[in-house]
Image (cartoon, rainbow, N blue to C red):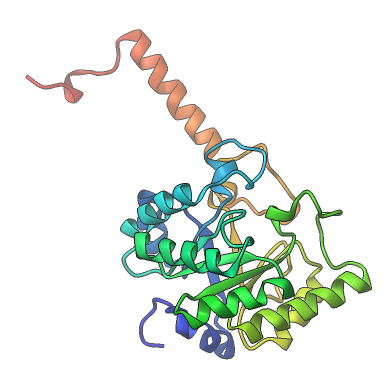
Length: 267
């Protein structure tokens, strides 16, 4: 593709060409601008913002208004990169009608490009209804944070029954019209198998390198959240310590009177 910017309708073509997709979470306009300039393919306004920015223990209390506020902010910072927005807990599970209304509001109020929702075969009719109404959808299987109170071990699909269900769920999401599927905390062999059976791309997080793309939480991969260190996470920077050092130096200079000096003052 001549344009380096991925378009949602091109995702299956990216997979056919063997082009790995790069996705990161993003919650604000400043980081959106930086990530777009660095060549990230897809930006995800994840309900993980409830934990990363809000300090909550899970994603469950994120609201639709919160998601819309942050998604609109990200979209203002990213003129060319597709922005996908998580539908928060209970905004799409109650009924198809509510799912359509809420997903439509997300796109209308934010100018973003797609929504993401969690769940397998049971959510296929909802996905089909959204797609039929012009709302692109990315699915999410494996460890699904909105179902944290029902899930057992974090890694999903290690036993044959769960693995079979994940295969069925992935096929159902593709048949319903999803344009991609996130696979979270799935054994790498199973994730590669699911990726091989789908025409749409899989985007892994803790699912090995057999997926068609990868996603990480931005603050985790930058090392800003230095108290979180799961096995799948690779930190590409250690910015928590950089922030501490910078703030410590600022505080020292303010307290000593060294800042502001003449260079940083007006006559």
